[in-house]
Structure formats: structure tokens, C-alpha cells
Length: 70
Image 1: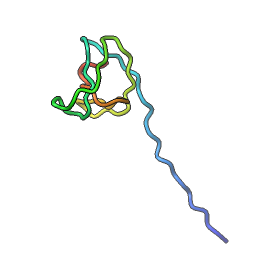
Image 2: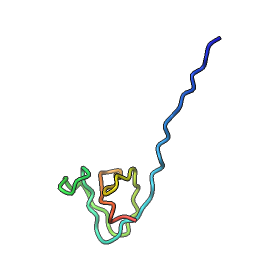
Image 3: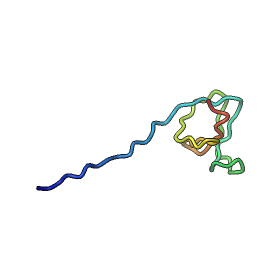
């Protein structure tokens, strides 16, 4: 009799939609204030947050500072 292994898939948390506030928000290549700027969001833009790293948020195109997003 063959035993069947149970496979598990790790579920990724769903991306969250948040709003930029306080003016323009730079998108950085890495989670570092001195990292290359790769873009910018405008005040009021809705953004998809893929991962919360505390002071930084990972978005589709890079990283933004979390204190300017709610």
C-alpha cells in the first residue's frame, strides 16, 4: 500500500492598497535613502504594497518610505 504525501503550499499575504500623502514620494531601487531614485508617486496616488519592511515598503517598482503612506 502506497502512502500519499501531503503537499503544502505556503500562502503569500495579499498585497495591500495604500495611499501616498504629504507630497511626492520617491521610489528607490533599494530600501535605503541613498539608493538610486527609480520613480515617484504623487500625493494621493494609490499604491500596491507587496511587503512591509517596517521603515520601508516594497512596491512593484522598488521601495518607498512607509511614513509617507497610509
